[in-house]
Image 1 (cartoon, rainbow, N blue to C red):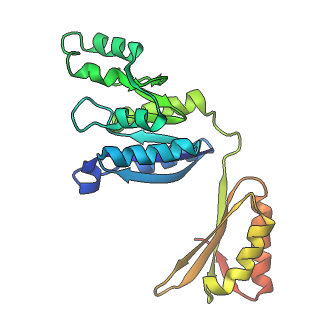
Image 2 (cartoon, one colour; image 1 turned 135 degrees about the vertical axis):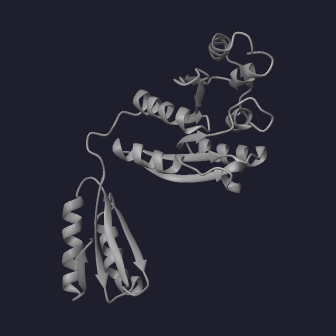
Image 3 (cartoon, rainbow, N blue to C red; image 1 turned 120 degrees about the vertical axis):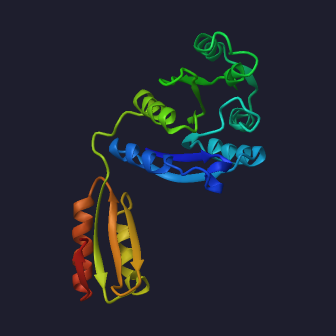
Length: 243
């Protein structure tokens, strides 16, 4: 399965905080045989958030979102998710109960706002402070704090997206003394012959110039890689396995 990732917060774009979500989600998804398909790092801008959430929801994509679900005035994600999904923002009884139980003396009037979620949301348990995240339309909204977001992301994957029995693999080599343009006929033929695999080409310029070629995927990976090597040999090209 492929997943998108939204990382939300002006502090990430300004450099006041460094992002750790992208690398973590890439790793945890790959370990389960899934893939991180795209990443968007967005500011705390309501209209932009609504537009981007609506686009991925309407495309029936799966996505995680980290950040902006708190109770401060600059936390827009809950409201924007509701607007993107075309539903109302309502007080979720289960979320309200969790927040009031965790903060019996200070839940109101501010913290309780974190229980205002898009209508129809499912809760995501928070093992750190019990204030839940939420899921709607295959989009899973988590806090910006990694120590909360990451275990909550694991829960979502375990709950809704079982690990693939056979994770995707990757194999590649380096081709020397040529360019992507000259390799194009080989690349086009291999793309046609192996449509279920993803062929990639990564040129590198410098003291040692080469083009890294390879495949990413599952079924047929070894056969496709042999076909790539055979095509390069037939063309008289110099190549070596990636070091």
